[in-house]
Length: 96
Image (cartoon, rainbow, N blue to C red; front, side, top):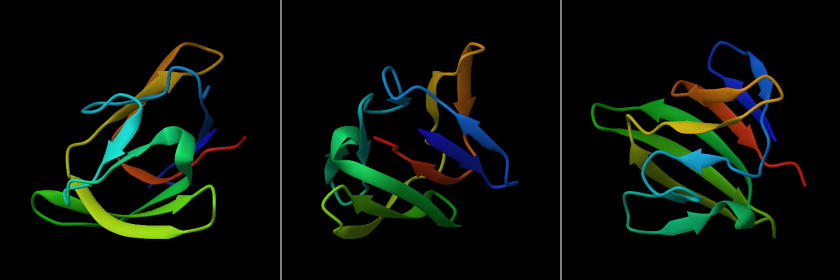
């Protein structure tokens, strides 16, 4: 999978073992909807507000969902070098 930071940096991360800091293998929207990573094609990180961050989630079947996550949400995984974590994201692309 490809993780792109706000600064434009790109990092390849193994899908196996990729985790969200709150729900492990899913993204939890503030609306209450939880979406497992295996159903997601991409997550675009949009505006940051005081306590939340707007996101657009594109599912594997092409549907798009817009919502918000907690602003401090962090994602972590493994690269070929070792552990990787990032907070300031632009996009996560789940390449399958």
